[in-house]
Length: 161
Image 1: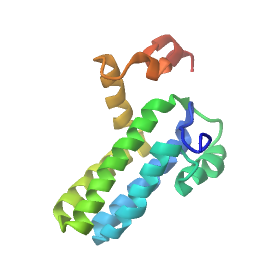
Image 2: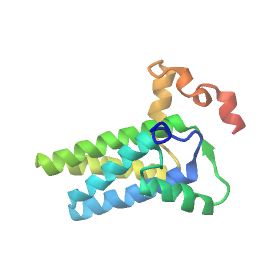
Image 3: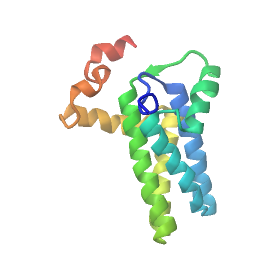
């Protein structure tokens, strides 16, 4: 069980952006078709990645082991902010799935899916991870302790990478 739980650190940003691109495509499909059932595998993927990294996420595994290496040399970034971003995605998609499928809150589900689509496009296309940004801001104000991500807290370590 110990080998199952955990998140890689560092993370290949190219693999992370690949995951974000697929998430963006699925979110757009949901918005275009109203197929809220797609929120279930989307939520599962986020939950799996937040808890185990790519180990239990088929998309994460393919992005890390197959697609990422084919995109050239890895661009390594700190893992904790990416894990935080996956946890936010897990919360967002889980609320959207339960709201839309179990409670009939279709509008809420579609709005949350739209927010997810925007942030997934920002990461996949521009490399801007909103969850990572939020993680950094929470570290800056002391909500997240510096020892959670030493690379994030020490600007010299980030510049060396």
